[in-house]
Length: 286
Image 1 (cartoon, rainbow, N blue to C red):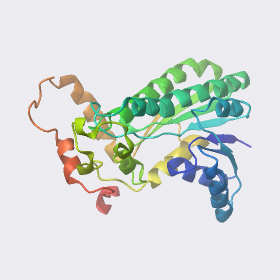
Image 2 (image 1 turned 45 degrees about the horizontal axis):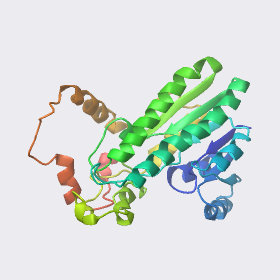
Image 3 (image 1 turned 180 degrees about the vertical axis):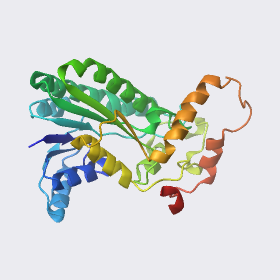
Image 4 (image 1 turned 90 degrees about the horizontal axis):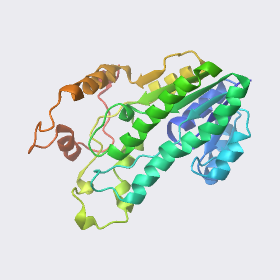
């Protein structure tokens, strides 16, 4: 039986994927950040009639990582992550460090020990839950995007370094999905330990500047990558934004450094105008 370790399985994408994978009779280890989530996920599994193993696994905790290195893992889904919103001129130092520790350093170190055991067996798969924020950048998501750009670099390096040992590497790149994750990113300022009077922006006036999609495609694609039904290295969802992502990447080559100086960037303006948790119109999700 294939054993799959999913980090950040207490909520969001990781939680639903863990439960669905268990329903497919995979041996699932659901890693959750805090002890309180262990029983909650166990109860979810019981309610859905599936069996999985729930373990406390904070990827930033060295003891938790060492514990996980002792498990025999066939597929690792590095899903644990947080999102810190705010301008790069305002986010406090501790918040910047936490963003990188949770999204980059912790997963990278966890992967080290698990990857070496996979190499010894000459078999395994490592998947990173990245983001379109790892490809392009929006205003007020610079810290989160920086972490996901780093995740892209980690995954790309591993895909080249581990190929000779028979280890597959892939990324999943969700766009704006309505799970609450994106909206919470625009509320992290509420717990900043700083002088609010020095902030460049009033974050009470801002919201996540995109309409958001139903998350079903991410669940389906993640399951496909884990099971091997999907072999693509990079997997952007929803598919209809792939062309937009490529256009944004290409546009950076021609953009001038003084372009639009003195005017407000369109997504900054949209952040002032949009309501939190605004869904994409149904016709746009087809």
